[in-house]
Image (cartoon, rainbow, N blue to C red; front, side, top):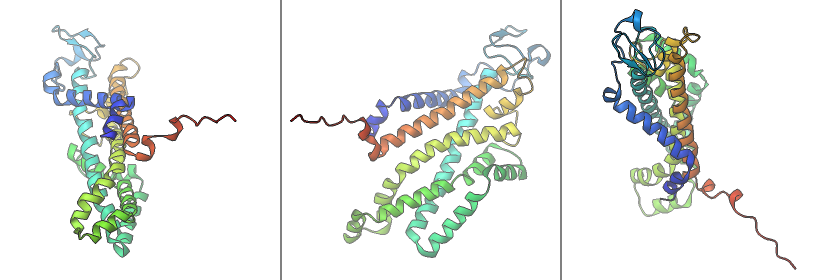
Length: 296
């Protein structure tokens, strides 16, 4: 409850959750809120590169303009939020699941099991992630689920190391010995004692990883090996507008602004979660008043 109050009082958390909640609502209600079909190309020669707040030949108002194919930018931004947020959330969920399983198994197994799992983790961690992403994405036909799996399977290593360190620290605490002495089973020990105390830093790391995953997905889509067109994502929208940046900057600038806002929001939430859930920073001594010196 104290952590929840701290989040409510933290302006970073309020701003971050407000931005992400707005994007989430827009993404879910995109079929209702979007004024036009995001892939519709009515009359390319007469509707391409229309500036924001312009009207087409049929009287349709394009509030944020159109791209080189005459597609409505506002509608594509709304549907693009669906893909970018879905990739970010699901890929981080895959990373957290794999990382927690590997890290907790290594800490509980000990011995050769721990050494083997950590050797695998360090080996994968040593590989350049961008090169691995480019290689895996180039081997198969790009799709939404492929991007989710590729990002998830290449982002679990830090979570695994973090979970292992936390479990090792918890296992050395006295209340674990007391729980074992009372006859608590191994599964109950893991579920009720290890997992709740391990998930605090994992949740913080996951919140920060969402922004990284959204950025990586946009980078892959920008390079043409992410979510394939004509499905809109913020990354391929930026790629579509890079050649027209001089005379039609809204095509690339607007999705870039949305991307930056989403990443900043996840970073704000991650920082606020860290301060709210970490008892060592919940009451920072630096904010406490200095003791007054008594006069003699």
